Image 1: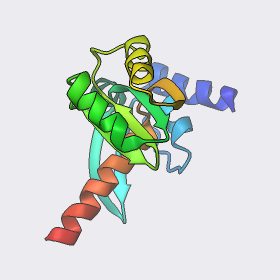
Image 2: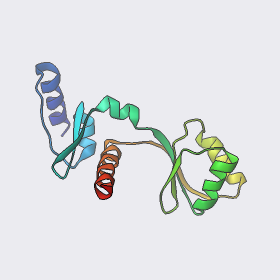
Image 3: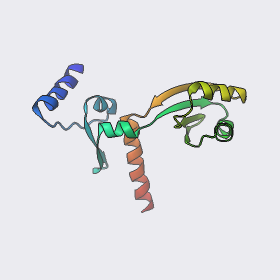
Image 4: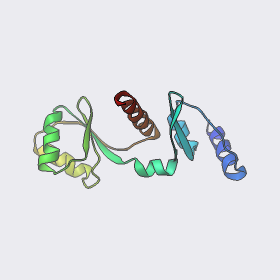
Length: 143
């Protein structure tokens, strides 16, 4: 697979050949494409350069805890954070780049919050794709 990726990159860079690839394996597309088009139910939603996606997609801290309400309170009341999102049962993403994982874990521990996992992550092409197709779906439902 690596050889095919390198061949496709070479064809594009050295020969100026545009190659269209349709795939549901977005991690592969992310590793070879310089421009992507998001197509949802046969309609092109957006065409964008991968560098723009990288700049738009934020790094975040993903946190898994048992008491999500208590964490939300501590984040806003004790740490003054507002740029966070509850993404699942017991999972929260903190998009504020001004807080370190060390400061976060220390503050949560001091407030008797058990952390089941804590990691720094960045959004992927798949995250971008899901965000774009969800926005289109939401607009269709409300129109």
